[in-house]
Image (cartoon, rainbow, N blue to C red; front, side, top):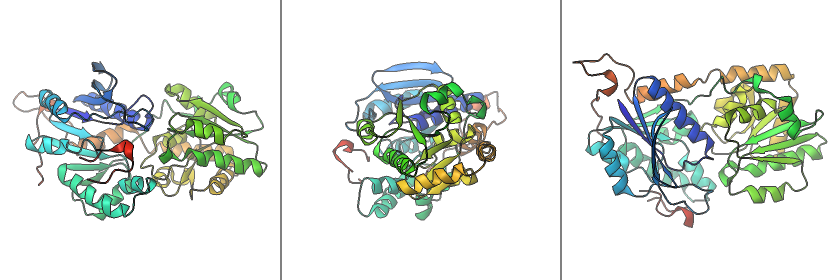
Length: 401
């Protein structure tokens, strides 16, 4: 079966989505399917990778978004889809690519939309009034465009459950339990950020408004004022970088920039004492799960999906600096061996193979017996045919199509 995956807002710095796309594509390939990924970029390219064929289409960057690009040429993308002749499409952009659900329905191609964020939550971050009503209206239309809506947590699924979407399924994502492991802890890496008598707190995320990186800095200030010898390592880059550096001017904050190498990231996560994830609209939080896999507990925002991901291996707190500082202290009060063992045990419940199987089940693409000499991986299942939100600011004109 040929599964064509479409994703906007993918850059070399979009860790979570990029990681999920890679691992799912590799899983599809291992299962004997043909995976094709189409993403925006600076220039056109077409190459084979471990996750299958990856096609990059030239796309203009969106202003004030930290380098995000969007494929806006519907005619060209539709022609490409026609030429690829997919059996299924998987769309990881519920705004600018929603129209592809209609393209698939018209051609009898099965389709799923992966909801990677809470629309109501994002509208709230952008200060939109009546955000739940707007989200409900938009989500209802989205559920009608696609055969399946896939959400990775109950948090993400809640807004579709609220409108009674009949085609909703939940499939948790996974974590690479080998690449992210407690054995990745490195004394030299730790020494780069903290002295032996200091507490190393890590924040690993894109530096954008929705991630609330300032909460990590402000929580450090509270800890220092309370005489906790904490330092903060910030792994990530983005539009908030300069403002965050100004905010942290008098604090022991070490900016590591974007870390693309997984082994380097794993070494930082495994060497930290605590990781903080203050984003209020995170719908899964792969960085938090990678921290747990490295044996490092996480303080998360109770407003996000992360409490259901980290479970007892972390602490969920309100989105204030004082609450995050208290969360760090609470985790440090637990014996180190106990808190690290609990973190690793929690992560081991989230393997990528389980996630891949769940997505293939949504695609109706689990291995089947070949018939009439046709390989099962290229049999086309019967498609299930199913019968503008205002822009948040000038940078996002025309998102919702």
